[in-house]
Amino acid sequence: MTDEPLYATFGFTDAEWGLLVGLPQSVLTAASVATHDSARKTRAETAAGLDQISDARGSASRLVTAIARAVLDQTGDPDRGEELPAIEPADPVGYGQDVVRRAAEASALLAAKADPADAETYKHWLVEIAESVVGAASSGGVLGIGGDVVTDSERNFRDTLAKTLAE
Image (cartoon, rainbow, N blue to C red; front, side, top):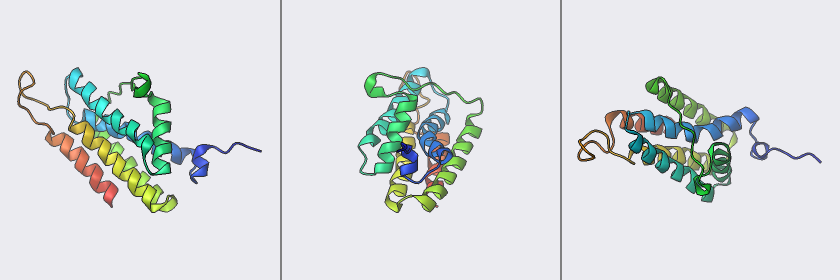
């Protein structure tokens, strides 16, 4: 008897599973780097995104639960005090565009291979991650007073991601 990999039980190849598992962290990173912030604000954004990923382990969708567990196994589980590795892309705009392109690929993949409810739950989850990150800390202002809760570049990334996943 052979042990079938988890992704195969859902009907995905290793590469397809890698796309689905890699996107939540990529969305978190792209949403966070959409606007350059202080280290404190970036930590708050990362924590908010990780909370969304971690909470998905309790999803009603078996697929989303499995992906959330896989993400945290690879990146570190905040419930165990582990921290997500810092990713600082050299080109934040280009990185965000790549994440949206990969989200479109994942959306098409899910439409072809996943239960429609699982597909919608996964796509909604990605938007929730982006929403929690961009809303976690205001940018601009002086001494933490004022500024925008969601900047134009953050809003643009979140809205573009949501639109792409809705198509």
